[in-house]
Amino acid sequence: MRRSSVRETLRAIRVAPVRTLGQNFLHDQNLARWIVEQAELDPKDCVLEIGAGLGALTEFVLTTGAQILAIEKDARLVNFLRENFRDQQVEVRHADALDFDVRDLFATRSAKLLGNLPYNIASPLLLKYLAVPSPFSLVILMLQKEMAERLCAVPSSKDYGAITLQIGFHYRVKYLRKVPAAVFIPPPDVDSAIVLIQPREPQDVPLCDRELFPQLVRRGFSQRRKQLGNLLAAEIPNWADAVHSLGLDPHVRAEALSLEQWVALTNFLHPILLPDRKKSDAERFPVVDSSDRVLGDAPRGEVHGNNLLHRAVHILIFNKKGEVFLQKRSRWKDRHPFVWDSSAAGHVDAGEDYDHAAKRELMEELGTDIPLKRVRKIPATERTGYEFIWLYQGQDEGNFRLNLAEIELGAFFPATVIGGWIHARPGDFAPGFIECWNAYRDSDA
Image 1: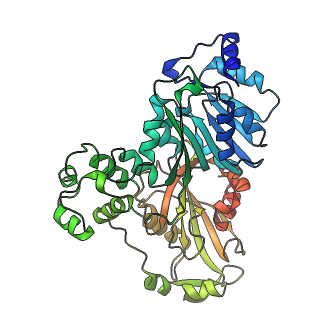
Image 2: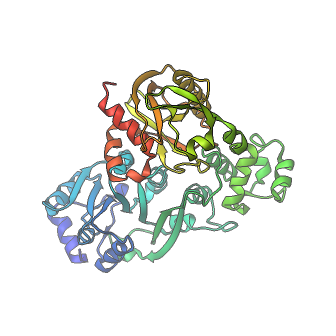
Image 3: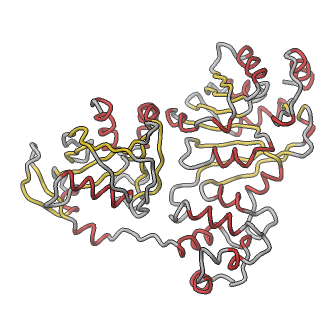
Protein backbone atom coordinates (compact mmCIF):
# COMPACT_ATOMS: atom_id res chain seq x y z
CA MET A 1 0.00 0.00 0.00
CA ARG A 2 1.04 3.58 -0.65
CA ARG A 3 1.14 6.18 2.13
CA SER A 4 -2.27 7.64 1.15
CA SER A 5 -3.84 4.18 0.92
CA VAL A 6 -2.55 3.24 4.36
CA ARG A 7 -4.05 6.36 5.92
CA GLU A 8 -7.37 5.88 4.12
CA THR A 9 -7.58 2.21 5.11
CA LEU A 10 -6.82 2.93 8.76
CA ARG A 11 -9.55 5.56 8.81
CA ALA A 12 -12.02 3.25 7.04
CA ILE A 13 -11.54 0.40 9.52
CA ARG A 14 -11.27 2.83 12.44
CA VAL A 15 -7.84 1.75 13.57
CA ALA A 16 -5.52 4.11 15.37
CA PRO A 17 -2.01 2.64 15.65
CA VAL A 18 -1.34 1.31 19.16
CA ARG A 19 2.18 1.94 20.41
CA THR A 20 2.09 -0.95 22.90
CA LEU A 21 1.41 -3.35 20.00
CA GLY A 22 4.31 -1.91 18.02
CA GLN A 23 2.00 -0.87 15.20
CA ASN A 24 3.96 0.97 12.54
CA PHE A 25 2.53 0.31 9.08
CA LEU A 26 4.92 0.02 6.12
CA HIS A 27 3.85 2.17 3.16
CA ASP A 28 6.89 1.85 0.88
CA GLN A 29 5.85 -0.63 -1.81
CA ASN A 30 9.32 -0.86 -3.33
CA LEU A 31 10.77 -1.82 0.03
CA ALA A 32 8.02 -4.38 0.67
CA ARG A 33 8.64 -5.95 -2.75
CA TRP A 34 12.40 -5.99 -2.11
CA ILE A 35 11.98 -7.72 1.27
CA VAL A 36 9.88 -10.48 -0.29
CA GLU A 37 12.39 -10.91 -3.13
CA GLN A 38 15.14 -11.67 -0.60
CA ALA A 39 13.16 -14.70 0.60
CA GLU A 40 13.36 -16.35 -2.87
CA LEU A 41 9.89 -17.83 -2.47
CA ASP A 42 8.19 -20.40 -4.67
CA PRO A 43 4.91 -22.36 -4.53
CA LYS A 44 6.31 -25.07 -2.24
CA ASP A 45 6.96 -22.55 0.53
CA CYS A 46 4.73 -21.85 3.50
CA VAL A 47 5.40 -18.35 4.83
CA LEU A 48 4.71 -17.51 8.43
CA GLU A 49 4.17 -13.76 8.62
CA ILE A 50 4.31 -12.22 12.09
CA GLY A 51 2.33 -9.03 12.55
CA ALA A 52 0.79 -8.92 9.08
CA GLY A 53 -0.84 -5.54 9.77
CA LEU A 54 -2.51 -4.29 6.59
CA GLY A 55 -0.79 -6.88 4.39
CA ALA A 56 2.10 -4.80 3.03
CA LEU A 57 4.24 -7.93 2.60
CA THR A 58 1.33 -10.34 2.17
CA GLU A 59 0.29 -9.03 -1.24
CA PHE A 60 3.80 -9.49 -2.66
CA VAL A 61 4.23 -12.95 -1.10
CA LEU A 62 1.04 -14.07 -2.88
CA THR A 63 2.55 -13.24 -6.28
CA THR A 64 5.16 -15.99 -5.71
CA GLY A 65 2.56 -18.73 -5.28
CA ALA A 66 3.61 -19.40 -1.69
CA GLN A 67 1.03 -20.09 0.99
CA ILE A 68 0.77 -17.69 3.92
CA LEU A 69 -0.05 -18.15 7.56
CA ALA A 70 -0.43 -14.64 8.96
CA ILE A 71 -0.35 -14.07 12.72
CA GLU A 72 -2.04 -10.87 13.88
CA LYS A 73 -2.88 -9.86 17.45
CA ASP A 74 -5.23 -6.94 16.69
CA ALA A 75 -8.73 -8.28 16.02
CA ARG A 76 -9.59 -5.24 13.87
CA LEU A 77 -6.70 -5.99 11.54
CA VAL A 78 -7.57 -9.69 11.50
CA ASN A 79 -11.00 -8.87 10.14
CA PHE A 80 -9.52 -6.55 7.52
CA LEU A 81 -6.96 -9.14 6.37
CA ARG A 82 -9.51 -11.92 6.13
CA GLU A 83 -11.77 -9.74 4.00
CA ASN A 84 -9.02 -8.25 1.85
CA PHE A 85 -7.36 -11.60 1.06
CA ARG A 86 -10.50 -13.71 0.92
CA ASP A 87 -10.33 -16.72 -1.41
CA GLN A 88 -6.52 -16.50 -1.63
CA GLN A 89 -3.79 -18.72 -0.18
CA VAL A 90 -3.82 -16.85 3.11
CA GLU A 91 -4.83 -18.12 6.53
CA VAL A 92 -5.13 -15.29 9.04
CA ARG A 93 -4.87 -16.42 12.63
CA HIS A 94 -5.94 -14.13 15.49
CA ALA A 95 -3.21 -14.83 18.00
CA ASP A 96 -0.30 -13.45 19.97
CA ALA A 97 2.88 -14.47 18.17
CA LEU A 98 4.40 -15.41 21.53
CA ASP A 99 1.72 -18.09 21.93
CA PHE A 100 1.93 -19.66 18.46
CA ASP A 101 3.21 -23.26 18.36
CA VAL A 102 5.97 -23.19 15.74
CA ARG A 103 6.16 -26.99 15.70
CA ASP A 104 3.03 -27.15 13.53
CA LEU A 105 5.12 -25.90 10.60
CA PHE A 106 7.24 -29.05 10.50
CA ALA A 107 4.32 -30.54 8.57
CA THR A 108 5.00 -28.21 5.62
CA ARG A 109 7.46 -28.92 2.80
CA SER A 110 9.36 -25.66 3.34
CA ALA A 111 8.72 -23.05 6.02
CA LYS A 112 10.07 -19.51 5.92
CA LEU A 113 9.49 -16.67 8.35
CA LEU A 114 8.90 -13.02 7.48
CA GLY A 115 8.07 -10.35 9.99
CA ASN A 116 8.33 -6.85 11.29
CA LEU A 117 8.85 -7.64 14.96
CA PRO A 118 7.40 -5.27 17.57
CA TYR A 119 10.49 -3.65 19.04
CA ASN A 120 9.32 -3.97 22.64
CA ILE A 121 9.18 -7.79 22.48
CA ALA A 122 11.78 -8.49 19.79
CA SER A 123 14.13 -10.43 22.08
CA PRO A 124 11.58 -12.99 23.37
CA LEU A 125 10.18 -13.38 19.85
CA LEU A 126 13.64 -14.05 18.45
CA LEU A 127 14.46 -16.60 21.12
CA LYS A 128 11.12 -18.34 20.60
CA TYR A 129 11.10 -18.52 16.80
CA LEU A 130 14.79 -19.30 16.46
CA ALA A 131 14.82 -21.94 19.19
CA VAL A 132 16.14 -25.27 17.97
CA PRO A 133 14.73 -27.45 16.55
CA SER A 134 13.20 -25.00 14.10
CA PRO A 135 11.15 -25.67 10.95
CA PHE A 136 12.45 -22.57 9.15
CA SER A 137 14.97 -22.77 6.31
CA LEU A 138 15.14 -18.97 6.04
CA VAL A 139 14.09 -16.01 8.19
CA ILE A 140 13.88 -12.37 7.16
CA LEU A 141 13.05 -9.89 9.90
CA MET A 142 12.75 -6.17 10.24
CA LEU A 143 14.08 -5.17 13.63
CA GLN A 144 15.12 -2.11 15.51
CA LYS A 145 18.49 -1.18 13.98
CA GLU A 146 20.22 -1.57 17.34
CA MET A 147 18.93 -5.14 17.69
CA ALA A 148 19.97 -6.00 14.12
CA GLU A 149 23.48 -4.75 14.85
CA ARG A 150 23.63 -6.87 18.00
CA LEU A 151 22.73 -10.01 16.06
CA CYS A 152 25.47 -9.39 13.50
CA ALA A 153 28.14 -8.13 15.93
CA VAL A 154 31.68 -9.47 16.10
CA PRO A 155 33.76 -10.15 19.24
CA SER A 156 35.13 -7.15 21.13
CA SER A 157 32.59 -4.76 19.57
CA LYS A 158 30.14 -2.76 21.69
CA ASP A 159 27.13 -4.58 20.21
CA TYR A 160 28.47 -8.10 20.81
CA GLY A 161 26.56 -9.80 23.59
CA ALA A 162 24.64 -12.79 24.88
CA ILE A 163 21.94 -12.71 22.19
CA THR A 164 24.64 -12.54 19.47
CA LEU A 165 25.98 -15.86 20.69
CA GLN A 166 22.65 -17.50 21.53
CA ILE A 167 21.37 -16.89 18.01
CA GLY A 168 24.78 -17.27 16.35
CA PHE A 169 25.27 -20.73 17.82
CA HIS A 170 22.56 -22.06 15.51
CA TYR A 171 22.28 -19.46 12.74
CA ARG A 172 24.22 -17.24 10.38
CA VAL A 173 22.87 -13.69 10.45
CA LYS A 174 23.41 -11.22 7.60
CA TYR A 175 22.67 -7.51 7.89
CA LEU A 176 20.87 -6.55 4.67
CA ARG A 177 20.00 -2.87 4.91
CA LYS A 178 18.98 0.04 7.10
CA VAL A 179 15.33 1.16 6.98
CA PRO A 180 14.49 4.79 7.77
CA ALA A 181 11.60 5.64 10.08
CA ALA A 182 9.93 7.64 7.32
CA VAL A 183 8.67 4.52 5.50
CA PHE A 184 6.22 3.79 8.33
CA ILE A 185 2.94 5.28 9.51
CA PRO A 186 3.36 6.45 12.19
CA PRO A 187 7.16 6.71 12.00
CA PRO A 188 8.86 4.96 14.95
CA ASP A 189 11.30 6.84 17.14
CA VAL A 190 14.25 4.80 15.84
CA ASP A 191 15.58 3.48 12.55
CA SER A 192 15.07 -0.14 11.61
CA ALA A 193 17.12 -2.73 9.74
CA ILE A 194 16.49 -5.94 7.85
CA VAL A 195 18.41 -9.12 8.60
CA LEU A 196 18.52 -12.48 6.83
CA ILE A 197 18.91 -15.50 9.10
CA GLN A 198 19.72 -19.02 7.93
CA PRO A 199 20.47 -22.21 9.89
CA ARG A 200 24.08 -23.22 10.16
CA GLU A 201 25.16 -26.47 8.59
CA PRO A 202 25.00 -29.24 11.22
CA GLN A 203 28.77 -29.50 11.68
CA ASP A 204 29.53 -25.76 11.57
CA VAL A 205 29.91 -25.58 15.35
CA PRO A 206 31.51 -28.27 17.52
CA LEU A 207 29.08 -30.18 19.67
CA CYS A 208 28.65 -29.02 23.24
CA ASP A 209 26.08 -29.12 26.03
CA ARG A 210 23.24 -27.06 24.51
CA GLU A 211 21.78 -26.19 27.92
CA LEU A 212 25.05 -25.26 29.59
CA PHE A 213 26.28 -23.06 26.71
CA PRO A 214 23.57 -20.34 27.00
CA GLN A 215 23.78 -20.45 30.79
CA LEU A 216 27.49 -19.65 30.70
CA VAL A 217 26.99 -16.96 28.07
CA ARG A 218 24.24 -15.21 30.02
CA ARG A 219 26.30 -15.32 33.21
CA GLY A 220 29.38 -14.09 31.38
CA PHE A 221 27.57 -11.03 29.98
CA SER A 222 25.61 -10.28 33.15
CA GLN A 223 28.19 -7.62 34.07
CA ARG A 224 30.04 -6.67 30.91
CA ARG A 225 32.97 -4.90 32.49
CA LYS A 226 33.83 -7.61 35.01
CA GLN A 227 36.43 -10.21 34.22
CA LEU A 228 35.00 -13.52 33.06
CA GLY A 229 36.89 -15.53 35.69
CA ASN A 230 35.11 -13.65 38.47
CA LEU A 231 31.68 -14.00 36.88
CA LEU A 232 32.08 -17.74 36.25
CA ALA A 233 33.81 -18.59 39.53
CA ALA A 234 30.90 -20.73 40.72
CA GLU A 235 30.74 -22.69 37.47
CA ILE A 236 34.52 -22.89 36.81
CA PRO A 237 36.43 -22.71 40.11
CA ASN A 238 39.60 -23.95 38.37
CA TRP A 239 39.72 -20.86 36.12
CA ALA A 240 43.53 -20.93 35.87
CA ASP A 241 43.40 -24.44 34.41
CA ALA A 242 40.65 -23.41 31.99
CA VAL A 243 42.47 -20.39 30.54
CA HIS A 244 45.72 -22.35 30.29
CA SER A 245 44.00 -25.22 28.48
CA LEU A 246 42.18 -22.89 26.06
CA GLY A 247 44.97 -20.37 25.57
CA LEU A 248 42.99 -17.43 26.99
CA ASP A 249 44.06 -14.31 28.86
CA PRO A 250 43.26 -14.89 32.57
CA HIS A 251 41.74 -11.39 32.71
CA VAL A 252 39.57 -11.83 29.61
CA ARG A 253 36.07 -10.39 29.49
CA ALA A 254 33.04 -12.04 27.92
CA GLU A 255 32.97 -9.78 24.87
CA ALA A 256 36.45 -10.88 23.76
CA LEU A 257 35.57 -14.57 23.30
CA SER A 258 34.47 -15.83 19.90
CA LEU A 259 31.66 -18.34 19.44
CA GLU A 260 34.19 -21.15 19.06
CA GLN A 261 35.94 -20.11 22.30
CA TRP A 262 32.64 -20.07 24.20
CA VAL A 263 31.97 -23.58 22.89
CA ALA A 264 35.45 -24.67 23.98
CA LEU A 265 34.83 -23.18 27.43
CA THR A 266 31.57 -25.11 27.68
CA ASN A 267 33.34 -28.33 26.70
CA PHE A 268 36.07 -27.68 29.26
CA LEU A 269 33.43 -27.57 31.96
CA HIS A 270 31.39 -30.46 30.59
CA PRO A 271 33.49 -32.58 28.19
CA ILE A 272 31.60 -34.81 25.77
CA LEU A 273 32.99 -38.30 25.61
CA LEU A 274 33.22 -39.34 21.98
CA PRO A 275 32.02 -42.79 20.93
CA ASP A 276 34.62 -45.51 21.30
CA ARG A 277 34.84 -46.80 17.72
CA LYS A 278 36.95 -49.82 18.64
CA LYS A 279 34.45 -50.83 21.31
CA SER A 280 31.57 -50.22 18.94
CA ASP A 281 33.14 -52.29 16.17
CA ALA A 282 33.72 -55.11 18.65
CA GLU A 283 30.02 -55.30 19.58
CA ARG A 284 28.41 -58.59 18.61
CA PHE A 285 24.79 -58.88 17.51
CA PRO A 286 22.65 -62.00 17.27
CA VAL A 287 22.16 -63.09 13.66
CA VAL A 288 18.67 -64.46 13.05
CA ASP A 289 16.70 -66.18 10.31
CA SER A 290 13.54 -64.97 8.57
CA SER A 291 11.48 -66.14 11.56
CA ASP A 292 13.71 -64.26 14.04
CA ARG A 293 15.32 -67.44 15.37
CA VAL A 294 18.90 -67.00 16.52
CA LEU A 295 21.47 -68.66 14.26
CA GLY A 296 24.57 -67.29 15.99
CA ASP A 297 26.24 -63.92 16.40
CA ALA A 298 28.66 -61.66 14.49
CA PRO A 299 30.48 -58.33 14.86
CA ARG A 300 28.60 -55.11 14.09
CA GLY A 301 30.59 -54.42 10.92
CA GLU A 302 29.91 -57.86 9.50
CA VAL A 303 26.20 -57.68 10.34
CA HIS A 304 25.75 -54.28 8.72
CA GLY A 305 28.15 -54.86 5.86
CA ASN A 306 26.44 -58.06 4.75
CA ASN A 307 22.87 -56.97 5.58
CA LEU A 308 22.43 -59.91 7.95
CA LEU A 309 19.09 -60.14 9.73
CA HIS A 310 19.43 -59.02 13.35
CA ARG A 311 17.44 -57.43 16.19
CA ALA A 312 16.73 -53.93 17.48
CA VAL A 313 14.41 -52.04 19.82
CA HIS A 314 12.70 -48.68 19.42
CA ILE A 315 11.02 -46.74 22.23
CA LEU A 316 8.47 -43.93 21.97
CA ILE A 317 8.19 -41.74 25.05
CA PHE A 318 5.06 -39.58 25.42
CA ASN A 319 4.34 -36.84 27.94
CA LYS A 320 0.97 -36.12 29.56
CA LYS A 321 0.06 -33.78 26.70
CA GLY A 322 0.37 -36.66 24.26
CA GLU A 323 3.54 -35.24 22.70
CA VAL A 324 6.25 -37.65 21.62
CA PHE A 325 9.95 -37.16 22.33
CA LEU A 326 12.18 -37.53 19.28
CA GLN A 327 15.94 -37.54 19.15
CA LYS A 328 18.15 -36.24 16.37
CA ARG A 329 20.80 -38.84 15.68
CA SER A 330 24.40 -37.96 16.45
CA ARG A 331 26.88 -36.71 13.88
CA TRP A 332 28.98 -39.79 14.71
CA LYS A 333 26.39 -42.37 13.72
CA ASP A 334 27.59 -44.67 10.93
CA ARG A 335 24.05 -44.72 9.51
CA HIS A 336 21.63 -41.79 9.12
CA PRO A 337 23.44 -39.06 11.09
CA PHE A 338 21.58 -35.79 11.78
CA VAL A 339 18.09 -37.17 11.18
CA TRP A 340 15.19 -37.65 13.59
CA ASP A 341 14.56 -40.99 15.22
CA SER A 342 12.56 -42.63 18.00
CA SER A 343 12.95 -41.43 21.60
CA ALA A 344 15.55 -44.14 22.10
CA ALA A 345 16.65 -47.01 19.91
CA GLY A 346 19.43 -49.53 19.55
CA HIS A 347 20.54 -53.02 18.75
CA VAL A 348 19.92 -56.11 20.80
CA ASP A 349 23.31 -57.45 21.85
CA ALA A 350 24.38 -61.07 21.65
CA GLY A 351 22.99 -62.99 24.61
CA GLU A 352 20.40 -60.30 25.33
CA ASP A 353 16.60 -60.32 24.91
CA TYR A 354 14.44 -57.53 23.53
CA ASP A 355 13.07 -56.34 26.89
CA HIS A 356 16.49 -56.05 28.49
CA ALA A 357 17.83 -54.21 25.44
CA ALA A 358 14.98 -51.68 25.61
CA LYS A 359 15.65 -50.88 29.28
CA ARG A 360 19.40 -50.62 28.63
CA GLU A 361 19.04 -48.31 25.61
CA LEU A 362 16.65 -46.06 27.52
CA MET A 363 19.16 -45.63 30.31
CA GLU A 364 22.18 -45.27 28.03
CA GLU A 365 20.61 -42.67 25.73
CA LEU A 366 18.15 -40.75 27.93
CA GLY A 367 19.37 -41.55 31.44
CA THR A 368 15.94 -42.69 32.62
CA ASP A 369 14.32 -45.88 33.81
CA ILE A 370 10.55 -45.98 33.35
CA PRO A 371 8.01 -48.76 32.81
CA LEU A 372 7.70 -49.80 29.18
CA LYS A 373 5.05 -51.77 27.38
CA ARG A 374 5.39 -53.63 24.13
CA VAL A 375 3.43 -52.11 21.24
CA ARG A 376 4.17 -54.18 18.18
CA LYS A 377 6.82 -56.31 16.50
CA ILE A 378 7.98 -55.08 13.09
CA PRO A 379 9.41 -57.54 10.55
CA ALA A 380 12.92 -57.14 9.16
CA THR A 381 13.05 -55.37 5.78
CA GLU A 382 15.37 -53.07 3.89
CA ARG A 383 13.44 -50.13 5.42
CA THR A 384 14.28 -51.29 8.94
CA GLY A 385 17.94 -51.91 8.07
CA TYR A 386 17.28 -55.68 8.08
CA GLU A 387 16.33 -55.47 11.76
CA PHE A 388 13.46 -57.20 13.53
CA ILE A 389 12.18 -54.44 15.80
CA TRP A 390 10.14 -54.61 18.96
CA LEU A 391 8.48 -51.23 19.49
CA TYR A 392 7.91 -50.05 23.07
CA GLN A 393 5.99 -47.18 24.61
CA GLY A 394 6.41 -45.28 27.89
CA GLN A 395 5.52 -42.00 29.60
CA ASP A 396 7.86 -39.36 30.99
CA GLU A 397 7.79 -35.57 31.24
CA GLY A 398 11.26 -35.20 29.82
CA ASN A 399 13.74 -34.88 32.66
CA PHE A 400 16.27 -36.68 30.52
CA ARG A 401 20.06 -36.73 30.65
CA LEU A 402 20.85 -36.98 26.96
CA ASN A 403 23.93 -38.94 25.96
CA LEU A 404 25.49 -36.37 23.62
CA ALA A 405 27.78 -38.99 22.13
CA GLU A 406 24.63 -40.69 20.82
CA ILE A 407 22.12 -37.84 20.43
CA GLU A 408 22.60 -34.46 18.79
CA LEU A 409 19.48 -33.00 20.42
CA GLY A 410 15.97 -33.97 21.42
CA ALA A 411 12.52 -32.41 21.76
CA PHE A 412 8.85 -33.19 22.25
CA PHE A 413 6.54 -32.82 19.25
CA PRO A 414 2.75 -33.01 19.00
CA ALA A 415 1.87 -36.50 17.86
CA THR A 416 -0.65 -34.93 15.47
CA VAL A 417 2.20 -33.23 13.58
CA ILE A 418 4.37 -36.29 12.98
CA GLY A 419 2.36 -37.84 10.16
CA GLY A 420 2.24 -34.59 8.18
CA TRP A 421 5.93 -34.00 8.83
CA ILE A 422 6.87 -37.45 7.52
CA HIS A 423 4.74 -36.85 4.42
CA ALA A 424 6.18 -33.38 3.78
CA ARG A 425 9.82 -34.03 4.67
CA PRO A 426 10.55 -37.79 4.72
CA GLY A 427 14.29 -37.14 4.50
CA ASP A 428 14.19 -35.63 7.99
CA PHE A 429 13.75 -39.11 9.50
CA ALA A 430 15.61 -42.37 9.80
CA PRO A 431 13.77 -44.98 7.68
CA GLY A 432 13.44 -47.27 10.68
CA PHE A 433 11.59 -44.59 12.62
CA ILE A 434 9.07 -44.13 9.81
CA GLU A 435 8.35 -47.86 9.95
CA CYS A 436 7.98 -47.66 13.72
CA TRP A 437 5.70 -44.63 13.60
CA ASN A 438 3.46 -46.25 11.00
CA ALA A 439 3.32 -49.39 13.15
CA TYR A 440 2.44 -47.32 16.23
CA ARG A 441 -0.27 -45.44 14.32
CA ASP A 442 -1.79 -48.71 13.09
CA SER A 443 -1.69 -50.32 16.53
CA ASP A 444 -4.20 -49.96 19.35
CA ALA A 445 -1.66 -48.15 21.61
